[in-house]
Structures are given as C-alpha cells and as structure tokens.
Figure 1 (spheres, rainbow, N blue to C red):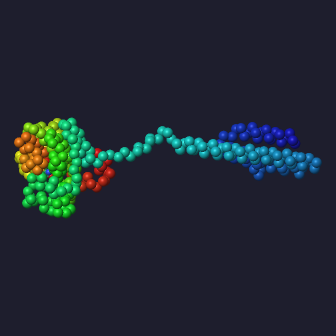
Figure 2 (cartoon, rainbow, N blue to C red):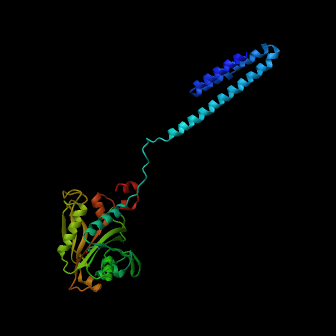
Figure 3 (cartoon, protein in one colour):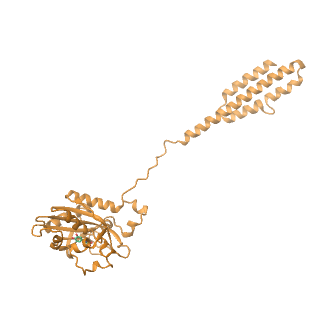
Length: 338
Ligand code: DAH
C-alpha cells in the first residue's frame, strides 16, 4: 500500500510540472482532492485494511493530502501574482501617443503689438509708455486741442475728476517723451485708450493704439511716407498699396489719413472696405509747431512727424476678423487660432 501512495505522490509531482493555466490547477485539485478524487478513494480503503495497518496508512494518506493541498495552494498564489503583474505591465503601453501639454499663446492683440514693435525696432524706434489715467493737459491742451473741441466733452472722454481722465489717445505719450528728452526722438508708444462708445462689432469703450513720433532737424513729410510705407509693406505684405488723404488733427499740420489697399478683396470691393477697395488704418502728419512750443522745443530748428493707429483695427484687417468684441471675450476657440 505504501508503494501505491509513493506512486500517487510521484504522479502528482509530475503533473504539477505540466500545469500552465489556472484551469490546469483546478483540474488537478479536483482530481486529487475532490469528493470523488484519488485521496478520498484512498480513505475508503482504510476500513478494509487489517486493523494494525490502518493507523499507519491513515497517517500516510493525511501526509499526502497536506502535501497535495499545500502545493496546489502555492500554485494558485503564484499564478495570481504572475498574472496581476502581467496586467500591470500591460497597463503601461509605451506605444500609446504621448499627452500634449497645453501650451499657452500670446493674445492676438499682444502679437500685433509685438509685430509692430519689431518692424519699428528695425527702423531705430524705441518703445515708450505713458499712464492710462492721465491729466487733461497731456490728453488735450499740450496737443493743441482747443478747450471747446467736441472730443473734450464727457460724450467722448471718460473723466475721473475735473482735470483727470482716462486717456482717449496714446498721443499723450508724445508730450511726456518730449518733456523728458531733447531731440533726436524716435519712439513708438503702444497702450490702452478709453472712449465712452457704445459697444458693437466695430466699437469698444477700451481699445489699443500705437503712437509714433520722430523729431530731429530737417525731418520732412517724405520721411513720414518712407517710414509708413516700410511698415505697411513689412506688416501687411509687399503687394499692399498705401495712399495718403488730406485730413485734420489739431496736433499735426499738415495731417493725413492713411489707407491701404483692401487686403481682403485685393481692391475688387467687399463689405470690409465698403466696396471702395481701400481701408483706413492710421492718422498721421507733421508735428504742429504749437505742440513743440508746449514742450519748449525750438520750432525753427526741429521738425517731426507723428502717427497713430488702432491695434484692433489692424489685427481685424490682417486676420479677417469681423467683430471687435471677440478680442475681449477670452473664448479659447477664438484665441487658439492665432
Ligand atoms: N490720436 C489720433 C486718434 O486717436 C490718431 C493720430 C492721428 C495720432 C494723427 C497721431 C497723428 O500722432 O499724427 O484718432
């Protein structure tokens, strides 16, 4: 009988070496430890044995049963830990495409201001800034804007108190710079301006301008044309044409409004250019002697030109944007296109 037990033991060990799936282990368990399994069958033999052999045989079967149970449990555990680490490995799939971190961008208006700064930097212009809360003197008086000028009323300017206001134009920076420095002066001044306009597709109570000022001995209108032509061709493209129309600003004489050929329709006529083929992009002119007098510059010795442009307007023309409000709504679907 003992030999029979040894044989069963050897068979069991041989069979454990062949298991490769959890199902094989289950089958082995049923075969040996099941109700109709090999070990139970052996138990049934005990009562048939001579009484002196029963206890030894019983002990041997119990040893075999413990052995088999332990080995099967071990196999179970090993199998579970192997398959779970396999699952873990599979969760980390190196062939998956990586996650793109969200990269922020500059606001389109900031981009335009940067582009304008770049063009003028190459022409030797420095960048100057002035306060948005400004004295009436810098916004009007020093710029030769008479006391009864309509732009001075609170229909056109936000007043904070008597002589303090939110600047309505960046031309204020012309005066502040000329007060600080002697010619030659070559600056551009980007910044926010404020006007009590009703908001619609083309108007906003706050928008951005870039002012330009060049003062030196012997500066002429031809210099103004040359600089603006250079800017327009670089910013809008070599094919874009420029034209000057006579105009009036209190701080320049003569004054002009500058148009460019409509970059949307190529001068064929469209709703952006009101079917004229041209769109106005800035005001400009030769600095009025009264402005020089306000900053105590010698009007016999110096001359200069100035210009001012709307940043929103230029950006709208360049990228075919038809509503100014899009710039201020912070809608990521709009902003991410630039
Ligand atoms: N300040 C003017 C405005 O806001 C724009 C302007 C026109 C600026 C002519 C200038 C200039 O420097 O010479 O409408």
